[in-house]
Length: 112
Length: 117
Image 1: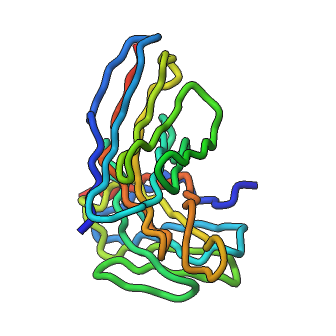
Image 2: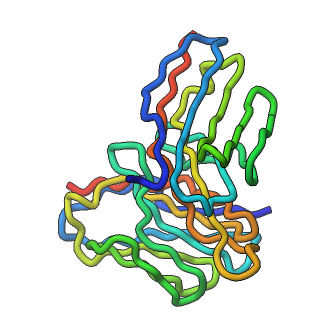
């Protein structure tokens, strides 16, 4: 069965510090991978998605970047965090044949 | 106009009530329709999914899709306090030739449900 791992679960970082959130998927190959952010409201904002190694599409221009160095690894980064980067970050992979997404447990980022 | 609109709630019901959660959409290309349940401080978990129009039942949960009206619903019977969560609808359309591959999901804003004892 497929599993998705995301870490860390919580993170408190000062303004201006770098960020690296990692997500890995097991049990599937060549998945579509996604980074979402969920702010104080309930909606999910799509930040980045990737259909393969080194292929990154950005949905919202901002202070963040993403990379996919390996087939089942997806990394969300920032060189300098802003207060507005605080939120709940979710990684997901997509079962392409049905368009079903499966999420990690999320990282709650607080920028202070 | 957003592609997917979801009744924002919040919704508060007594234990045992029937709950109805709804979403409307504008993109007629959507083919898979999903409901996710998200507990506080956790990632969303896939609750149910339906392909095209029709009903699907799983225990106390029933998902309905009416493509002619571009309307989907999730019904929860005999609601329990453990059903208290945020419920998100989501939809996907096929991409590329053949219609066998799907790309991004489009989510509703979520409905917060509280079932009180």
